[in-house]
Image (cartoon, rainbow, N blue to C red; front, side, top):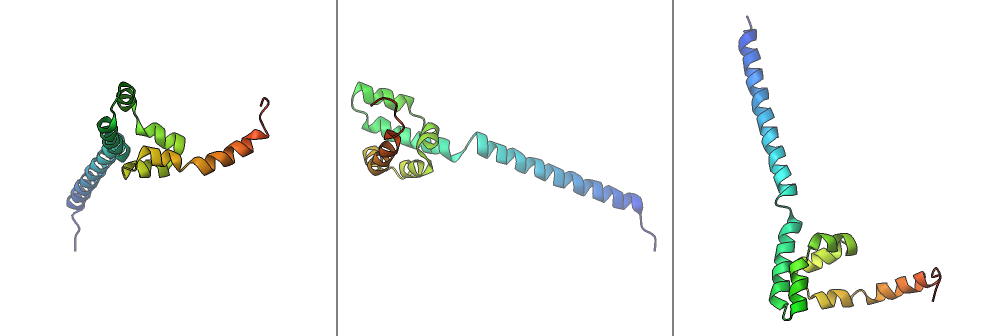
Length: 115
């Protein structure tokens, strides 16, 4: 039994080309999902709409225009971002930090140079 090496070689090359193109397509989709359509941008847009709706005075409208949720995640942690995504009241989120803040102030007090 003879094996046609050229035909087999051609099939392997086509198979490799197909797999390579498929991999390239997946990488492009992943790059788009990570950089163009990430969840945090969608969340930021939704929360910005909530802020716009609740902004009643000039200061509130200015804050709503400048809001960026990615900074919130970096400063306060992902649990805050989750609470924002669930459309929890911003005042309730801030109020929930009182115990942690008092612990931090107590710890910080012994390192202050000036009181």
